[in-house]
Image 1 (spheres, rainbow over the protein chains, first blue to last red):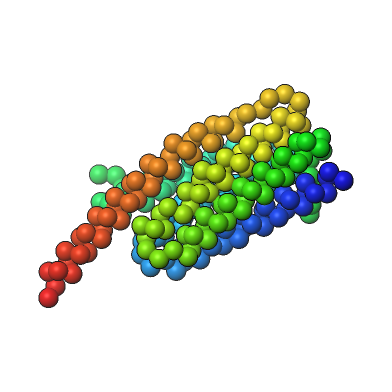
Image 2: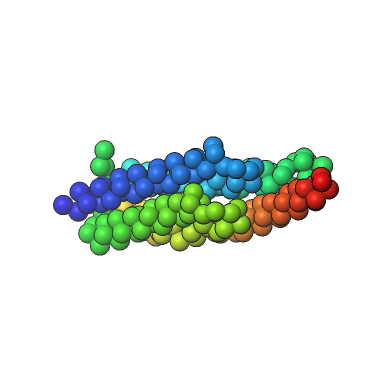
Length: 93
Length: 113
């Protein structure tokens, strides 16, 4: 009995996070300016990270943790590089 | 489809509540990203997901793996620490870039007529 509501709540949470990713994707595709697209890319990778954590809870395996950490690292690096590009016009001076 | 780990009842209740709460808060933050009018308002909305949503989902993951392996497993705290440290840095860099771009375009618009 405890299995059923836990499984359903994790599935509903994954659907909600998928809807959040769709909202971020909508803003990413139709954002009026470049900084809106960078901001929505940031929100997109954070939601993808949370979705991977819920997959890790669902399967009970720990190897989703490494993927989550790598997504967090690469998302931070990419957002900083894109913000630097918007500021200066080039990433490495 | 609705697969779940084999947890005791208290851990299952806590994990279910925290996961649902975190996902709802993240969805609300991203809806704010979609709905708000200007860029500087939009910048505040997804931080709801990167603070409260991330914290509650990672707390649920910690409780789940601690109950599964019957020892304290808190390596998710590294992700929480990293995201909490890096989100203000990225948003400050992005807002400075947006201010710079707005200001330079305003100057162009004034020079044009």
